[in-house]
Image 1 (cartoon, rainbow, N blue to C red):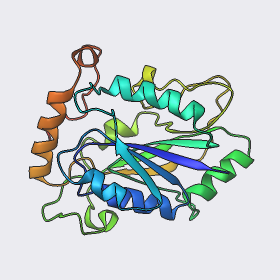
Image 2: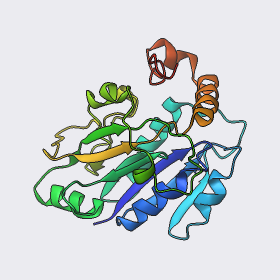
Image 3: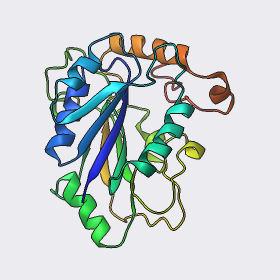
Amino acid sequence: MEIAAYIWTYNEGDFIAHSIRHLIGQGIAVHVFDNWSTDDTLEIARSFSDAAADHWPAHREECSTLTSRLQYLEDLAFNCGYDWVIHHDADEIRRATTGETLREFIRRADHCGYNAVDHAIEVYMPREGWDGTQDPEKFFDELSVANHLDARSWHIKCWKQTDYKVNLLSSMGHQACFPYRRVFPEKLLLKHYPLRTQAHAARKITERRRSYAADELARGHHVQYQTKWWG
């Protein structure tokens, strides 16, 4: 059984190696699509011989919105030839709490007749002193006040390929929706490290707010950084 994780990146040079290294060690094929980062994200991703990495979109001047990325992933996943697909962010580490690798956990879900996997979310607070060389699972140890917002939601970002193309856009990437979906009753743990230090947080939030599409904002999306704690 072949499983692929698709990752979109933008200026994640301090973290992307951790995500790629972890996924490869868990038996997952990795494909990175870099949205023309201005740091060394793409170079780091390309340094892994077992991962595929390139710019997306192909030309810098082409527009890349969350909507366009999700539509592209819907088509890509349907035609990729992998048995299972993971919609993965650059600043995440996922684990099976059962002691299995991700590959073993997903294989067991498949064997039990399920075709989708949900996630339990842990969102971590920034901590000064992070420089990208530390183990994020050991360095970051405090959950964010925003954690409860993510914890209430479904995060069905891992699914088995079926005869139906998944719909990611309707949930803005939080759920892969498709006919006859059967969600495994056990969840994977998704550890999310979106803001690593105060300086990183200020830079990332500014960059992301500039890039948000007006129609996506009008529909109430991109509110993850609107909590009292991080602006």
